[in-house]
Length: 390
Picture 1: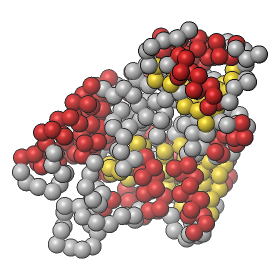
Picture 2: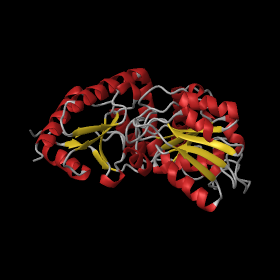
Picture 3: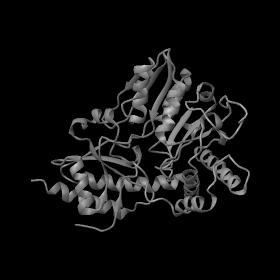
């Protein structure tokens, strides 16, 4: 079976396509506005500043908070996580995290462990890729400064019990950083319900914006201890050569990626209009359809919960007789089904799954613009691939 239609199932890497309004917003900025943010009083510059601040307002509305100044724009999700980790942790601090994390958390923590004497505990997960809150609670010490936990694994999609962990953090006076790379925009998230003091996410995945955008929500308790990791021009208090201490300027030195932010503006409007609950329902239905179809194929192993209610729209599989990279290449060449293969920048997760030394997994991730027929074509393609093994 072949199809000329491009079936994009790599939304865990970046969402595609984007809402039409995103393309229009970026094009309008590039062709008609073209001004930097916060650095001019002419009409176009004022309009750009309005759009940037409006984007903060939309994002804070999305996560259920009231202070747009606490929404920091960054270069990407990795940048957001680095700001949180490098900006908060000091020599001798202790951090509790998990084996489910992306390298955007694992590598900064390894660097801080090796160079700043930060103590790191990485708790394990069960066979479904879910971390036990009790394990996190038992790992806390008198020196624990932070718990850092992904909201959903970028390998298995497993949803972590962030609300329970947030309660544990509050009870012990520990800061809680949530990596929402695979959930923000895909499902409803309210900061008050998670207990997160910091919430990091890229703008280009579930938020549907352009690449090169990211956000970090900084709560009041985190702000007290979070140092700026970059200093420079902000367009404010220019008479002073010390870094501003007010938000968001404290963490936003240098020119913004305005084309990306105005695109993100349009994207978040789209999410708010459609509604996070509606988006979650749509993607959960697609994920369930995918899981049911894959479970019927001999030679296919599903890694993770295998239950759409317990995971984001991310599914990892192995196909007997196929290297993940080989399978992904065939799916694209023969069926125009585009998936992700490999280790997904999450080596400890794959080590826990037993897939680290076998090339990782084949990851399929649905998005807002996928349809049931995309899932059906994909399941059929994988069934043909699995059946072709001699």
